[in-house]
Image (cartoon, rainbow, N blue to C red; front, side, top):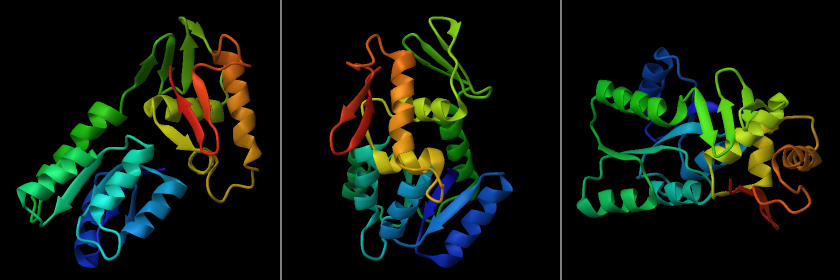
Length: 221
């Protein structure tokens, strides 16, 4: 998973922004269209999306809507469109910020750092009786160590961070094992079973990790 996905059809601007962000030690992926952005996002994911509105084909609002249907990834809209209606549309669709072009790169980077600090760089993730130490890759349940493999930990973290959202099987598999992985998709089903055995009062009747038939899984806590 990359840190930042830039969705921008202006190649020069996209290149400059990429350079600034990489200089800040962020991993960056770029897309010049909404369709390519969603394809990259589904396969590899991103911890934050910088999104232009005026794109060839699918516009940025449609991209924002599609991402929000499946995940709570932070989205910053970067656009020359300054109309009040556009700003309201972006906010209603779930964008975390709406910044007009031309923007000050230092201010943008400060906003990005703020979002990462608040939402993505938490050392500890808590959910009821569960505690996940992100930095150490360890977990506890009711204050006692919870033995999880690395893949189980990442899968549980992704589910908890998107509580209430249905995450598709393809997205989960690609995020955890990678689109180019030699593992079989059935691997995901096995890992969900293992997590349920460790987390559910009755693994045969799960109430925390729910199956959404025909789609994927949802964390209810």
